[in-house]
Length: 88
Image (tube, rainbow, N blue to C red; front, side, top):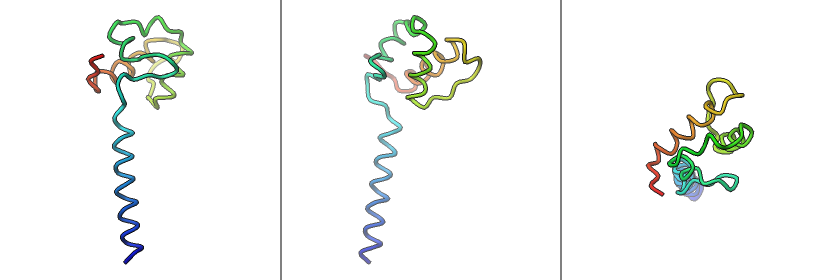
């Protein structure tokens, strides 16, 4: 009975952690950049490709298109901020 109760508690804890991982905190800050701020001011394109790549890698975002173009990295970041309704 104790093992079942312990397993239930662990499962509940996992669900809470997974839920928290899906909800980025605002503002979204990665490598010292405020992604919400940069997106709202259309400044993501001012970053270098390697900086955008590092941010997307850290956030676990899927990149589509050429990895040599900024647009391939900016698009998923824009979508992330829109999906999260960041108002900073």
